[in-house]
Image 1 (cartoon, rainbow over the protein chains, first blue to last red):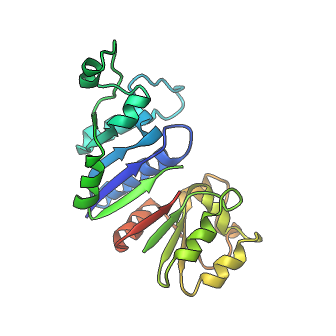
Image 2 (spheres, rainbow over the protein chains, first blue to last red):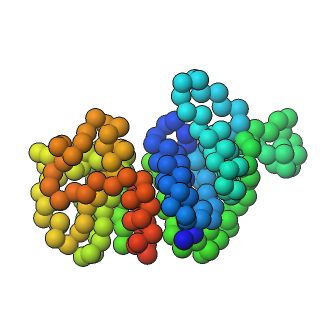
Image 3 (cartoon, helix red, strand yellow):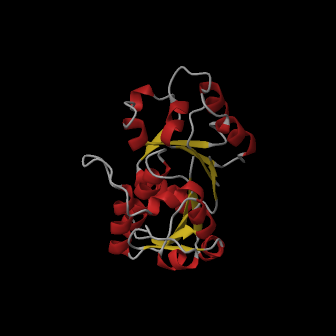
Length: 130
Length: 100
């Protein structure tokens, strides 16, 4: 079965990002397909490659990148939410004339249409947030 | 239909809102801080008992354990599931409503 996942909350603040990660891991283990993970609102903060949590803590952004690498997940940050919060990929850096980018490996920035498409294409949609 | 609740009923009223909208035959899964809703001796026990014939209640085991709780703290008619059980609930129900 195809699952679409929406994450509305940033890392470390609430449990949403951890719950979503554990859910996705279990879904993959059970043989399901993750059609897309869409990060909206503060959820876009999951996609920064500049995070340096304490060494004995989980590294939430890296954990997403690694899971995506292993299972070829599509991790999408909402462009409007990303712009507001300073989440920038190379394209956005040039377009908005910024001096840096900070998006983590395997994440991409795109529009809300990607969420709608996931809702249409996936068999199930589940939301994690605050 | 599956309903998930992630907030403690002492913080938000999503449990009572959910129960107001949930149809007969629905499933309700408590995750994150909502696991406190299914502990013994709270003011929410009655709501769960009154609905348990029509609604099936589940709680996410790892979130219980993370809060130092286990089966002995739970009120009756609550089934503990792990993340695989969570996935199965989502797969088995055509729609999921996440009360945030």
